[in-house]
Length: 217
Image (cartoon, rainbow, N blue to C red; front, side):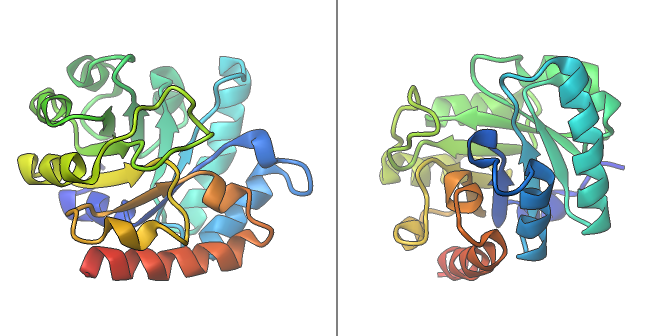
């Protein structure tokens, strides 16, 4: 069953996006479980290099983990993997499939997140059926070298222009998360701030607290 708007909004608070660049001391599954133990409110599995077969096998394992912790599981970009792994959501970028086409493929029960960097892109995504918007990069980031920075005023304008949940992404960490206070976002999506951490569980716990303060501030 598809998550309600309120459930999606709650999931945006501390949204962890995987990156296997920091796999080594722990497996990706161990890292994800530590993030879940720390209170991550959503997990997005992002794999750019794996074959569809390996991506699906991994997605099934990650979904089981997320189900155990009662946290929504999202697949990045790959519609087939999202459907076959029974993901709760799928996230697509501007250069990927349009939200209306994604809906035709995933059916009514999967929520759709779309990346946006401008008010126009966000409004268009909502009209096409997106359930939430990922806005970024809000700060410079090494994770996605081609991501353009979204100024604070634009982020604020995007939040005001749509009535679906908005999550900010890109270069966010413990030091700058409070700079997003007053923007109207529902939470933050984090990559290196979570998965490059020495102790993922305690780092996520601290980030959840900071995100709550930022959202409620």
